[in-house]
Every structure is written in structure tokens, then in C-alpha cells.
Amino acid sequence: MTLAAQVPDGGTVLIDTNPIIYVLEGNPLGAPFRSIFEAVDKGRIRALVTPITVAEVVTGPLRANRDALAERYRRTITQNPGWEIRDIDADIAVLAARLRLRHALKLPDAFQLAVALEEGCSALVTHDRDFGTVSDILVLGTARRSR
Image (cartoon, one colour):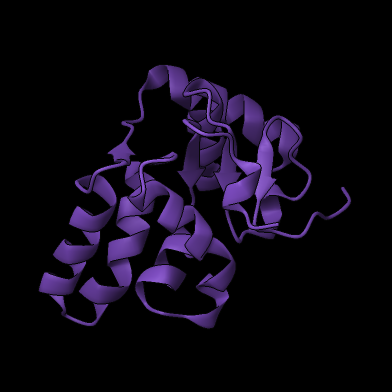
């Protein structure tokens, strides 16, 4: 079963940084995530990202002095149909702090999870094992690990 098949029609997924980078750069690790991107492109599901993801996705191209590529990546994940960016506000910050403590997450991961929960996402799509113990939401794309 593909990752996208686990998301209901009309559902929204928060996509974490690594799957986006893998797919945009043609990395073989992106293969499992392509079905998610295709479902977004077809309008079956919606993708949500945060400013954290935008910053992380453009870091590589900016480090390589490839400003045009960084801008292309930014537009891809914030301006294409089916993609939306959700700003982080004080309410999300407090929820992120609670989730950080509950799940022993790094602060950026806690923000990702907080946005996904606040926005009622069907799933969080990631390649980050740190989400392996999260049970608040369906986590797609990463191996579960015990606490």
C-alpha cells in the first residue's frame, strides 16, 4: 500500500522537510513519498508546510549559492496548487512546547507536530525517526521506534 493510499480523499497532510528534499532532488529515499506528491498534484489531498520546512528546504541551495534554485523550491512548496503554508503563532508555540515535553521531540519537530494537530491533518509525512513514538496523529514514512 502506498503512503498516499493511507490518506483519505480530501485529507490534508503536513509534509516534513526530508521527504520534500528527497523528492525535489531525485534522491532514491524519495521513492516512498512520490505517491503523496502525486496525490497532491492530482488534487486528491492537500499538502501543508510550515516556515520551518521552507527554511530547511532552501538551506542546501542557499549554502551552494544557488539562489534561483532556492526560490524555485520555495515556490514549489508554497505556491503550487494543493500546497499551503501555515504560519506559526503563539498558540502553536505553546502546543509545541507541550508536545516537545510529552514526546521528547526537538523543538522544530514539535512545531511540525503542533501545526499538523492544530490544522486537523490526516497524517504527518516524514522520514524522521524522532516521530516514531508519536501516537497523536498518523505518521507516514518512518519506522516506528520504541520509547
